[in-house]
Length: 99
Image (cartoon, helix red, strand yellow):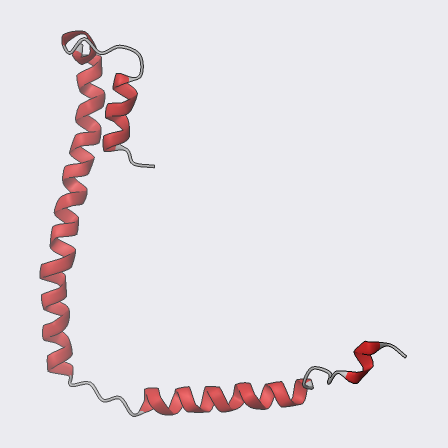
């Protein structure tokens, strides 16, 4: 007689779907009870825009300028002026172009 027959089998699909339905009902209930004041939400979004989005945009512009400038500097002779050899320029590129 195989040993596996003594162990209980996995729950049926019907039982699993009822558990999932109960979890979904509970989650819907918790979300539906949340009330947000529109004026407070608007002021919070404005603060986030000023304190998060604005600095990120400035950093993005500065990173773009650095990427453009290092290419132009190589064309204009930066490697000879700084006596770069081997992988020095590639290392400098990796600073401005993180993978």
